[in-house]
Image (spheres, rainbow, N blue to C red):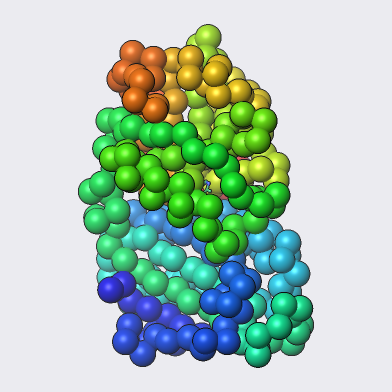
Length: 286
Ligand code: PDD
C-alpha cells in the first residue's frame, strides 16, 4: 500500500482511493504521468517534472489541467507523508465518460498522487553495477510523451526480471538502441560519452537532462547518436539514468561483460557529479 494517496482534490485513506470503471485512464490508457524523487525532505527537480508534464498534457490535447494546482497538490501530499526519501507518483487521466474512443473535451481530469518510501525500490538496484538484457522495442511512435500506455515496457521489464537482471535495453526495428524500459541509456566508446538523440523514440528523461548539464560543467563532451546493437556491445561503459536508478552502471549485457565488467571511470564521475547535485539540492532549471 502506498503511504499517502491524493485523489481529485483531497488526501484519502488508500482504501477509499477508488476510480470509476469508466475512467479513460483505466479504459484506454488515456493519461499521462510523472515519477519524482525526494531527498532529505525536499522534492527533487519538481519544476523540471512539471515542465515535462505540461508538454505531455499538450501532446495528448488535454488542456484543462491547472499546473499550479498540480504543484500545490504534489507538495501537500508529499508533506503529509513525512517521508524524507520518497517516490512520488502523479497520474492525470482525461477523466470519466461512458466508453467511446473519441474524447469529450469538457471532462474533469482525474488526478492521482501517491507517495511511498523509496527504500524498497532502491533495495533491488545495485548502484555498483547491474546486468541488463536487450529486448525488442515494441512501443508506439510517440515515446516522448510520458503516457501510461506502458504495456511494451512492462513486458520488457518482466522479461529482464525473468532473466534475473535489472533492466531491458530496448532495440528498435533498425537494430538501434533506444532506451531502457524505465531508464535512459548512456554509453562510452573510444573515451567519448554518448546517449541516444532526443526525439519521438525516447522519453526526454529528467535525469538524462541533468547528466547532460553535469557532463557539460565537467568538460565531458556528450554526443547524441543512434547506435547499432553490434557497436553498443563493444562500448567500454554503459549506464542507465532515471529518477530511481539515478546513474547506474550496466556491467553485463546479455550475459557478456560490458567493458572491463566493472563500472567505468566516466560512469563513476557522472554518478558522483549527480549525487553532488542532489546533495546540494541544485535542480535549478538551466
Ligand atoms: N521512468 N525512459 C523511460 C521509458 C522511462 O519510463 C523513464 C522513467 C526514463 C527516465 O526518466 P526520468 O529521468 O525522468 O526518470 C526514461 C519512471 C521512473 C517510471 O516509469 O517509473
